Picture 1 (cartoon, rainbow, N blue to C red):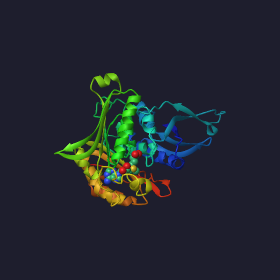
Picture 2 (tube, rainbow, N blue to C red; picture 1 turned 135 degrees about the vertical axis):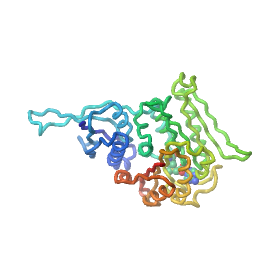
Picture 3 (cartoon, protein in one colour; picture 1 turned 180 degrees about the vertical axis):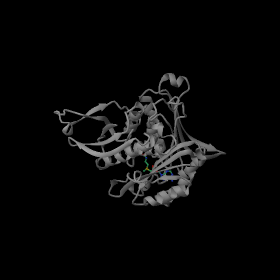
Picture 4 (cartoon, rainbow, N blue to C red; picture 1 turned 90 degrees about the horizontal axis):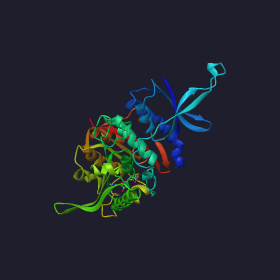
Length: 376
Ligand SMILES: C[S@@+](CC[C@H](N)C(=O)[O-])C[C@H]1O[C@@H](n2cnc3c(N)ncnc32)[C@H](O)[C@@H]1O
């Protein structure tokens, strides 16, 4: 039995920070069930010297694989083992001490890939990691989260590395996180300006960090017809890897998400993750309004109506055993509606008490929740 605690990351967003310990506890419970063989118990938020921690018990000793999985929790700042301190001869009144445990994230790219871009409507990076983690944990490959960051082979047993699709990707927070995790990424967004801004950002970032790469922004055509702008980049983590032809890949299409099946091969994606339009000012209205060359106006569809049409399309793109994770504004659609539409698309939503523990406030008009579902 090992007693552990982790310090919750101080979030830059004060509203999110208020909910972070509770969300961190929920994420840990999901991780424990899916990636740590159900060995996590007694999960509790606690305050030590005025600072928020999440404490828990791990059945058995802490292995390297356990540490790697725990290290990727979205709100983990530092991990500690709780050990008895000075007992004064009386075990019952022993002080508990926190002994630091080295727990590096598996990220293969510098964190500024996620933090440099600032724009209205950007999804908070910590929350994006929570959504991606929870979705990967719903797949048949939950171990991918704690696998050593060996991007060349994809995993400890040489599995293929994951392919992550964000079908409403904005300026690419999910895509950058997938790349940082050593996975390939595909994005789709209606707003051509977002796709072009992402292309400019990533090119500059790859140059600044001196990654060997090839990048191309062009108009994709099929049968003489334009399918919209498309950005593709491939890069090596080292010069040697690049020279050996091993690269991480990201592709972003400017298109209506309902057309994703024309752009991405069905059954080719492990994880679909998206922060859906909120149906408020910095969601559907000011961004993604079809003012770019990307397509028609989205204002004719409420976020729920859009998801009703889009989920069956996204579901076809998933491999069996893959999973979809959606975050959305519960002020425009109740949780049960999302769960039903995922089930209607032939997916298996994870809707137990733990998975119902992620709702949180974003601002006055947005109460956000997330739901994940597996493709059987
Ligand atoms: C909440 S934002 C996602 C932000 C993104 N996670 C980021 O951090 O940049 C929702 C996105 O959905 C896009 N969107 C809305 N309707 C769409 C549609 N029909 N097809 C594709 N994208 C759409 C918007 O352009 C917007 O970028």
